[in-house]
Image (cartoon, rainbow, N blue to C red):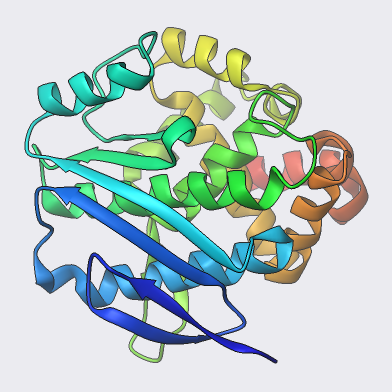
Length: 262
């Protein structure tokens, strides 16, 4: 297997990785404390390693804009996305300029998690845009779910990974299930505009549900099958049909497994 480097210009310099592409990050704005270097390197390596076989180019370039406060971040965001809604405390990925934007107004741990979230969006776009698939197609909630998955990735001392999501995520989805308003089919068919519309009405719940679905898929399918899922979507199969084909028992079993996990 070919060896290549993950080049983090923002952080600690070249780090050796097996089977990944060359990721170059151009950083401008506020600095992220060096204490986060190891966590950032480890997580970004995992992201590139996951998306690489799906269709990443050999060299991936990404810009990272870090702002001290939300207002400054919003001014930058709206320069390229005038219709951006809400107050982007966490951040945003602007595909037109391949730039992840985040504000460090709140806790730095949150800002670093946002970095992982936004880089995932960039790599998802690059891996899947090799085909006709765009963010407006049916797999948009998978895009957000994967971003959440890497956002909450943690490492044990032996290097293995696990998930540590925000408790609000799980509590919110549990509440939806309890009042019988959890609709898996809706999220498997959701495009970008539908996701944005739902977000306008239910706040962040759409992100919570997308994460829970993706985490359940990862738990049952594993990394290789998750890559296969993305490749199927890249090649034109809908998210819903890909899940039905790959998940043991189809989407009805996925729905049952999610409900029984709470």
